[in-house]
Amino acid sequence: MDKYSYLVESQEMLTDDIYSMWVKAPELVKDAHSGQFVSVYSKDKSRLLPRPISICDLDKEKGLLRLVYRIVGAGTLEFSTFSGGDTVDILGPLGNGYDLNAEKPILLGGGIGIPPMLRLARELRDKGVSKENLSVILGFRDSSFLLKEFEDIASVYVTSDNGAVGIKGNVIDGIREYDVSGDMIFSCGPTPMLRAVKAYSEEKGIAAQLSLEEKMACGVGACLACVCESKDVDDHSKVHNKRICKDGPVFYAEEVVL
Image (cartoon, rainbow, N blue to C red):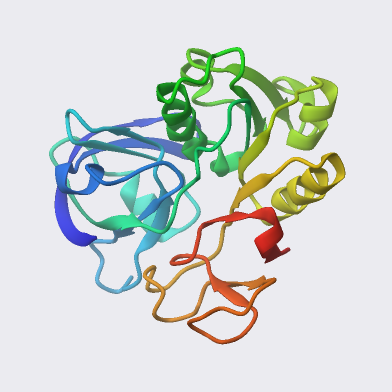
């Protein structure tokens, strides 16, 4: 885990506020895997803290890292102006990713929690999970992105808040409507969605892994700014907390209280 200045390979706009950036980062990608994230630094020194962005995809042969992110403030607005040939400072890979211990996985991605599901789907496929047994349910706001890439490797089901794409509803509505079954749920999205995933996993008796979202400061576990309530006492803080950046961002559903 080191901070480097990397070369931007390319960037494109996927929707009005979502961008896809490929970065030449050979030192970073060699040990990176699904569920981890990176900290991306602004060139404006008045914005001291980096922005955490999940890993969307990796090309380890070419040393490329893909970040798909939404513009939510000045930092990510700045990142959206980068183009091929620019440089960007990145620290990573950070955090712990998904355990790929499933034969019939169900991937649930909501909003900007959709991009990290793409790398996860590729890794599960590379482990031998067939397209028929790899189910992905994507919950969009009002327009889709990355859809074709998911469809190439998985059985894909789509929902959206307003019904503009797929059925109207959320990912839990989708898993019920499409009658999707499996032996492990992998999920990433906003906290209300993850709370619903946790409840669904308990209802159906299916294990679930949750990738939690939280505002971060240091990103390496030192500042305790991004904690969540846990069932067990944390060895570091000695209370019922887990550091999302260091202990997560991926947890088993029974480990955390949402």
